[in-house]
Image 1 (spheres, one colour):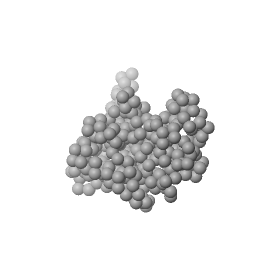
Image 2: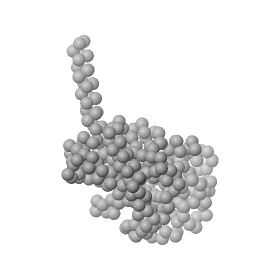
Image 3: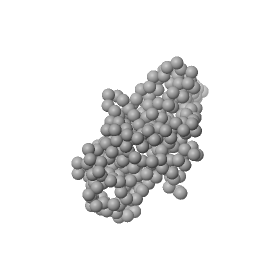
Image 4: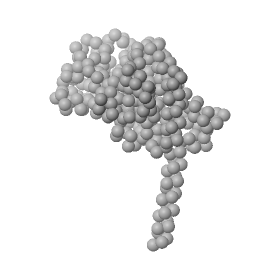
Length: 300
């Protein structure tokens, strides 16, 4: 019995040690001299690909500045950055299993996800809206009855759609894109009558389309969602380091300059403007940095 208890105790210690090592991201980064950033391929101006393994966007460039601060903090002469494209479906598992150290794409911070991962302070507050063809006649979610509505698999917009379907008695058919570009293509090609998603993702895809004037963003705001970088749970030192970098970027004005660069100026690859001014909700999140989930916003 004593041997069994001793074996269990040793196993428990070994397990806790392994877990501590697994969640000590700063140590992992210092030991390996590298960090893996999770990014997106079509998340509007927040994060997108330029092809050939190159990534850009507001959150992508912000992540690069976080990396620079981490390198300085750890006293590393060099820190290799690896980019791992993630999707709405696999982003959380890839953070949990250690493949991705810091995901800076377009992830909503909500209570359910906080059970699985941790979030940095909010850097963008999103409004979920509806995009349609300009000549569709659709101006609100109530007019989606009997229509086909595109959204992206694994996103919170699916939950938003279902909530409104129950509450308003609107009966529509959901069609799913594997990523945001695929979902927009469903709208563009006429296989969907509307695309429900984060407003900036809608605006970004419209700005990059062949004929931006053919589309419009309409209707009521369906939900307000804080967007933040994501990391493994129970790693307070790494979260503090990431948060400190973001807060410094807010304080010195560099984050505001990045916002202007990616949302208000022409951006690659099409050299068009997204044209979304900094919202009052995002300004408020920067003024009082926090990692509150979207449920806290719903209470207001």
